[in-house]
Length: 78
Image (cartoon, rainbow, N blue to C red):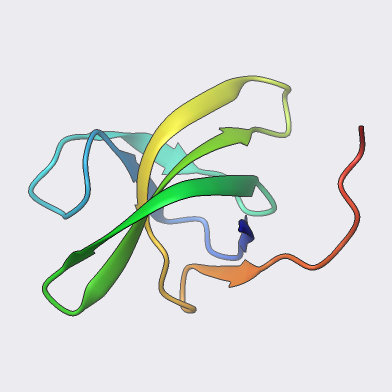
């Protein structure tokens, strides 16, 4: 599944849940290719790879709630 970040305060974390360290924020518009999910409390977290607007890659976990990102249904390049 691919999700698109819609808020500028979504953390990229080392593991699922807020108790895991943050690598930093994921910019709005970033596409996340989710490869695994985990439930922590009532939240669903996704492990993903993503490509930032500057072309850099990231791998980590983020909350998949609809307040943070939406399901992406557009066409991916390549």
